[in-house]
Amino acid sequence: MKDLFTPYELKDLKLKNRVVLPPMCQYSVTEKDGIATDWHYNHYVSRAVGGTGLIIIEMTDVEPDGRITDYDLGIWSDEHIPALARIVDACHAYGAKVGIQIAHAGRKAEDAAVPVSSSPIPFDDKSKTPRELTTAEVKDMVGKFQAGVRRAVKAGFDVIELHGAHGYLIHQFHSPLTNRRTDEYGQDLTLFGKEVIAAARQEMPEGMPLIMRISAQEYVEGGYGLKESLNIGAAYKEAGADIFHISAGGEGAIAAAGRPGTHAAYQVPLARAFKQELAVPVIAVGRLDEPALANAVIGNEEADLVAVGRGMLRNPYWTLEAGVQLGKAAGVPKQYTFGFPRTNN
Ligand SMILES: Cc1cc2nc3c(=O)[nH]c(=O)nc-3n(C[C@H](O)[C@H](O)[C@H](O)COP(=O)(O)O)c2cc1C
Image (cartoon, rainbow, N blue to C red):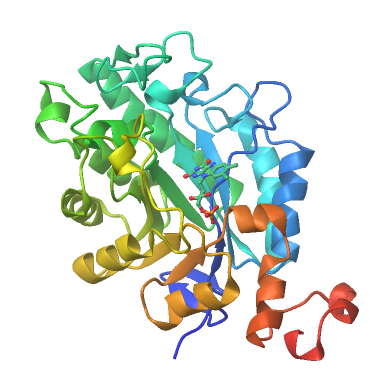
């Protein structure tokens, strides 16, 4: 019987427990240069001290105009590597493994003078109309993702996540709402994502898992549903994705009828469907911050790993607290043992 504190292993990745910090933008780059600051260091290292098994660094973009805002992290230059490596090394020292979400915001790049996308369709009526990437530029973009992954591997990350969710560039390509292209990238909506996966794999050691984050369901009228996203997932699995991180939405102004549930565990059925239908390991996310609930998702084999986002913004020691509530040894740092029952040490 597995629980939240059962170690997890896939290829060369070995996690001490099944708790994941999902990527969450901190908008805390101070010089608009994409370089991680002391805020990022303190934020991520606190969650490592707090017992998190896997920390995934926020959306980190492959070119300046691929950022949501100018305060986001970048990975378009070797100058980004040292500050990221410093965070990775410190998280490792406290027993966490570390991933990074490699991304491009596409039409959701708010500070770009002219954002780019698969097709020239704005996000909503307040957004800039993006410029459609030429076929040659799409191929270049695959190279930018590849260079970002190469830098991440150099920085010492244990795992790479590609951001294929929430209406960002990879999602823009695989959604029929935002990809109206007539070239090969429009004939096969998953071609861009598959090429990014293959390019990433070329830079990654054989034993390093690749996570694909995907919106398993769109909430806009006429958007794709689970049946279609399972097909997208199958194509990405075939291309080399090892783990799926199952989220939803983010593609545009939500139709009233399409509003997502806000109840606990609202995205777990989507994660479970990916796990069952595609026979892949999955990370479930979305209002899983009650330890007993997160534990049940693992115990019931609905997901392999559980991510806790806003719950960990509130409490960097979420995992240690979960250990108390579940009566499990969570590996409390020796400096903090007086604050916890003996059984959690
Ligand atoms: C402040 C904030 C920033 C976020 N930034 C990202 C991001 O960079 N990449 C991403 O894929 N999701 C991002 N998300 C979504 C979270 O990773 C997570 O999927 C979401 O918060 C639902 O999980 P929760 O209910 O545990 O918070 C963000 C969420 C929040 C609250």
